[in-house]
Structures are given as C-alpha cells and as structure tokens.
Length: 430
Image (cartoon, rainbow, N blue to C red; front, side, top):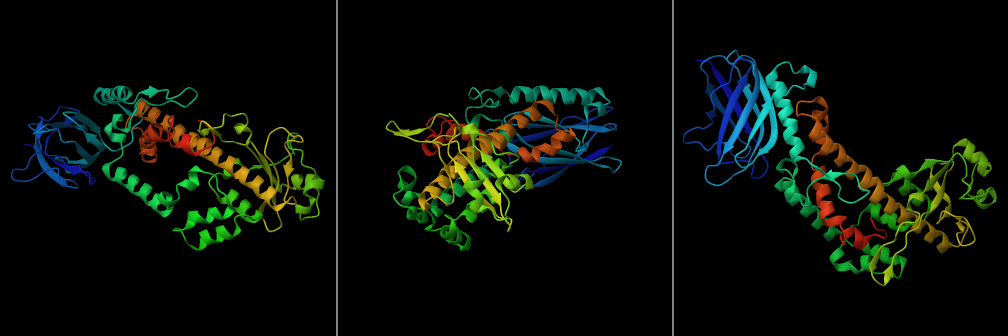
C-alpha cells in the first residue's frame, strides 16, 4: 500500500496552534486519497511552532500530486489555526512543498497548490484550472471594493480592523508591538507632561527644546543648536522625509519673480541667477497643490492657517543646499513678499518655519498617506482579487503589502476619520 509522508508546520505567532481536528486530502492527477484525520494518539498535535509528520496510506498511487486539501473541524470550541506549509514525500521518494501561510477559521478548508510559480497558461489539467478559478471567485467575495470618501482611492470594504479577513489582520504580536511602540514614543517625547505644547501656541523658540527633554543624543543636540541656520534647513530638506518635492529649476516662474539683485549675495560662483539656473545649481520647491484648501479649526474660535509657498534652493560650492528665496503664496504682490536671507533674522526664520509647515502637510497627506498607504492598498486589493497564490507576481508582491490594508483600516478608523487625530493636530482638512 503506497504511503505518503505528510509534514505539517504550524505558525510560531501567538495563538497559532489549535486543538481542533485537522483533516487532509491529497489530490493527484489520477485520483484522490481518502479524507484522513491527522492525529497522533497521546500526542498534542498542532502546537504553536510545531512541525508534525504523519503517514497517509492510499489504496493506489495517486499519480502526480497537484493539490492538498486541509480541513479544520471544531473539537470543543472554535480554535483558529495558522498553517505555515505542508510538505509531502511521495512513495517514489520525491518531496513537494505546499505553502499555506494563512489562518483556518471556523469549520473551513483551504486547498493548496505546490510552491512553484504557475501562470494561467501553465495550467494543463481541469483540476488546477478549476482550483485557480475557485480561489479567485472566493477572493473577490472576501476582498471587496469600497469608496471610503469621495475623491479618495478605493479601499477595502471594512469599517473596522476586526471586519478584515483574518489573513490580513495584525497578528497578536504585531498589535501589541504597535501599542508598545506608540507608548514608548509618547514616553520619550514626554507628551503626557508637555501635551499643552501641541495644543496651544508656543511663546518662545526655546519651547522647542522641551521636546528633547528625554531624547538626548549627539544628533538631537546638534540639531537644537543649528536648526535656525540655512545649511541645516537645506540639509534636513534634502535628507528628510519629503525630498521628492525638490525639482530642478529650468526657468524662474512668473508667479515667483525672484531677480538676480535679490539673491546675488547668496550666489558664490560669480554667476548671475539666470546663469546658475542654466548651470543646474538652482532647484525649486512649489506647494501649489495646497493653494485654496480649507484650513482646519481645532475649536470653533481658532482657525488655523496653511500656506502654499515656493522656495528657491541653491547648491553652493560645497554642494550644500541653501534656501535663497521664499514666497508664502502663489500670487505675487505687495501683500505676498519674497523673503530673503538678507531680511531681518526673524522674518527669514518665520518664512522658513512656514515653508516647513507646508512641507509637513504635503508629506503627511500626499507623499506618505496617499502615495504610499492608500495607493499600495489599491494594488493590494487588486492583487488578491486578480492573482492566484501561485501566480509569480503574487509571490513577489505579497511580502511587501503585509499589514498595509490592516494599518490603513486602523487609520480610517482612528487617524484620518472625522474628529480623528489628523483633525486635531494638523492645519488642513483631508
């Protein structure tokens, strides 16, 4: 009687093990095995992190093994199980691996193909063709599209994290780690002690130093000492979180009428502004997308302000990026002056602060939220709906979108929702 040796690997994350009954059916090109209970008498199977082996006996050879079907049936109370993979040693001595990496919940089953990548045109038998189609049909019912808000990219149809399919929810460890990291950040910033700093106006630039009461190292101390200086402004712009807004300037725009006379004291190569532009040493930052947006109000009486500034950056002889002109609005005029390094100390400093405030809004809502989180979710949902687990593109993408849909759902639930953290902390509405 042919014997197939089946090895089952249970996940190592919290609560991955199960006390429920686990059944297996091997599907070959010739026939299927009997539905077999995987159980070792007097042995606690399927514990967290365990790798268990079983013999599955069949009456006749199954032919080429193409699918493995796993079923979980309730023993006492429903006990979810996370299976990492199945390996099968055939009677001929060949080994086949069937990746799973998913949860079996309630009294449900999963059907697995081997770990080799297969395009649809590679499916030669009706069995695997039907499996691919059934998998995608099930996924389309599980991963549904929804428009969260008009104008936003489409998202998953889930109001809360708990409504997501189990396989894309945070693992227990990830959820705990998320909370602990958040708590640690709050502790490091002494936010509990200095929360008023983030909810009211600062009276002095020295208030900035209070943020670093517990975060003290060489870098933070250097930044505190030099953050007002132009070289540090340029350094942080280029090496910070949003350098994608910096563009090479090929022509000074009409809406930002900077002249050579305004900035010649900042230029180091004995070239005019136009010649520096031609040489490729002038860069521009333009937050036009922020123009005309509705500012936020932390309370009915306190309206915040958001600028839509522009800035010229200059690459000097030392190849450092230096700000040389800032305009806080998009329409030039007497009420919208161009600020220069030669202006009074605090006029120039405040212009740079306003620019960094606009950069924060652009980064948080566009570069970070929109172009990473929300757009990645669109591709993630499309992947689940259109690509079977054996598709090579699915195998390439799946590690990179892990937890993306989960964190986005939590953000819509707590962060960017109406009256959420974004509404309370930033100067613009989403």
